[in-house]
Length: 196
Image (cartoon, rainbow, N blue to C red; front, side, top):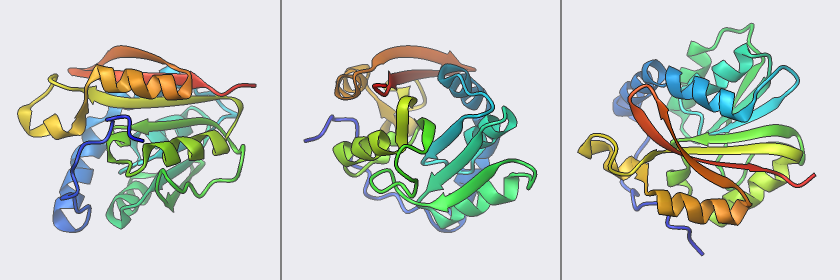
């Protein structure tokens, strides 16, 4: 069963120089989104945040700077390399290989799981949500953020999600949907709290 969250972008190949250029762009341009998501998730010291599809780790570093222990998960070796390169060794942040459908995190280990502009790449939404539920402790917070369809440049449209698709996803997780603004970006946000 699909939520319609995922678009068909099988052509993405997150390797090589193009991936490095994209990663550098993401590392520089996502600070406002990272701060918004950390605020929405209520990240504090004592949290264990799992960043699914962490890319170059901008949001993961924001959480770590707020005192959380962070596991940044990404399937791209180049993105993981950039995340490690940009992350000071003093931050409590571990970068690991993994996908949403098979998170390399122990059962109930996370107090926060988020996916920022990465859920539209999930190959199996239901499997990814099962993994999220598995790794989140009771009372844990889930935040999924995607750019709102029709709110950015046309060349980015295949990296966006209609609000109705986000509402369908929110129904699956028992969450809520809101539209938020970070800088010039309009974002659709799905938030849920795991039953306690």
